[in-house]
Length: 406
Image (cartoon, rainbow, N blue to C red; front, top):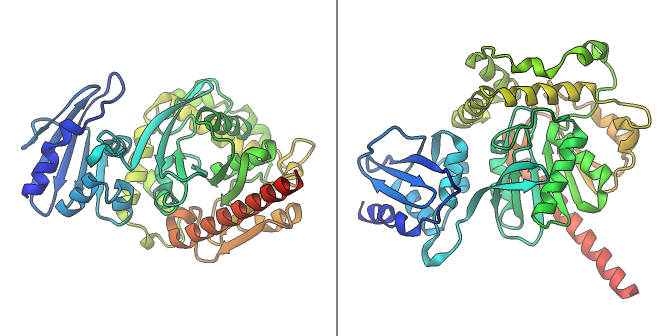
């Protein structure tokens, strides 16, 4: 108890400040000692109170041992969450940013940083962990955000600098009203994000719509992509396109009109993404569903969601600019991971990928749905690490050969 109290008492001295206008209240609950502390933080100062005095913007729960390891920099909040040693309620971005508000003992930088990157005309909310020389960028699917990659961030951050981003239109990123929200536009924003951080080349990992975005970046800017990991990518449908004329007539701006969204409907759809829902911690499901509902209350978020969904269906399969025509030009090494029980993107697409990219590696998990990095994290992350290591070795070998020739 004494050490826990000392860790709270030291927070004001360790506070690094925040953006102008930042003014939030955090509650930290240590269940094993039955105590709750309140941390009030604004752009310049923070203060600690116990017992709490007002309604919090976010609640973070853990035990005293984990709390001390977090404050000492022996464990990151993401690792604690992955190990089910920490939970959060409320605005998850606020929970993520808490750790990055305070320097570690000895003036060390925090292990986890939540920040906004100004990329071209967009502001991209980013979770950055790790300090490796190579970078990995994780791109979420439709209706999701960076929280869908928590396990992957933890698994890769020991060797790479990992950036889990919210695409524009989703999560805490900017949501322009008149953006096209198609694969080309999203890919352009990913490349602008890399430019803003001075990243020449990166490994891209994308799930569902994020996989389609990663593929677009790999096709259009192969020199910027070290490797591509496509997890149930939302590739263009070759058949079942009878509704295209009608979908073209439906304008996503109609979603700006307020309409109810039942929480039960969101939860039912979320659980349908998995072959074996019992594998998931209900805490993870609660976070994902609560985040979607919170975001959906925003007019601009609804328009972005429906515009992106519309463009996924309208993605042209053939012709000079068709997806399957262009896929054969993909140069970076690629890994495709499919779920045999995926009801959204059937694993049978692997046949068409093999025709276009005979050298690409493909893996199908028999007992998996649409989000392999969440449902089967250990197997998926092992494949990602293998892909990235192989791609890096190949690139280093190429550079050595070029140096000898020079």
